[in-house]
Length: 412
Image (tube, rainbow, N blue to C red; front, side):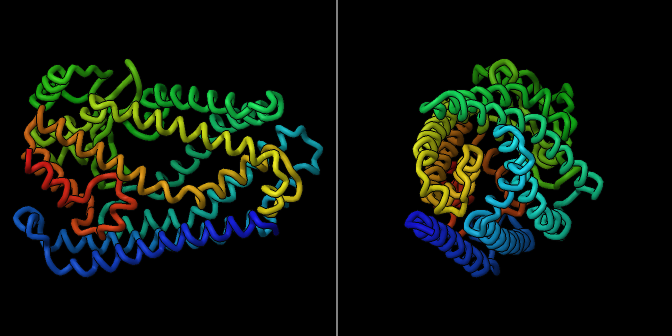
């Protein structure tokens, strides 16, 4: 243990103390407002739906707290407990090349973490989501999804990891600049390929049938000057009762996707308004702004790692006795969230700002009243609480709370 050990422990304690405090506030606030529907929603949301959302929010919060405790325990076991050193020393004993040994060691850690997270994921899906009527996944579907995700990570992630370790070994002092360029290029390529190569592995995408909804959407796209590679309905109901809509892809490979659950619950004008909101994110350059911000943060993070990797105290302070590029990369990924958690409310603030701007865009190109009614249906069907704690939502929420968002839309 050295000075950095204590710095890490203090950062870890503070970040999780804030998280647990906010979670406690959220549960207490939601429970306090559970008996009555807020005045602004009494005409549109039943008391039963409001209380279901409150119970669902509180139960998810408790599960999140348990997940955090488990995460802390195993983070400390992996680092100060010597788990990473044991794994890396074990694979090094096979006399493999440094890159292959590093890839296998990192892969082993990720597999162990995935296995440790599996019981909580099973409980979330087949107990909590089932209890509130959201789970539509079967055991077979759940197992298939887990295996497919593991295969994808292996096929895509391991070669990328090997390339990064090679760059770290061979390029020299400024390896982090090249690594950053590789990661950004890979991210853009994956975003472009995702709609046609990856997403169809998990869901079926059916082109939207001709009719009034398709005509309305095409007219909206023409008014907004937006082109896409098609409008699709996704069979989200085979896993969950939650509804959503999103854009995916880049350039000429963009797709508009509606969950089938959403298409069944909203009328045509509400679907148009929800889509107009999503279009607002593109037309107001939110996607590009978020991409630039993410790229800058990635570059800064890699530059910091480029400095830490040359400091022996970084390794010894986190329980690693044998220095290596792979170990440094893993340590940085594991411990950096403890030091960057203070950025969560900053990011959330700008994301909420973007949501308001997208709502304004939707109000210009569709009916604000229809976006309001569509949102209320989504809040109710997804059991999203209408009464979040103000501090919790300010810290965590990427979307404005329902009452604030709808008040903003009413001004339109």
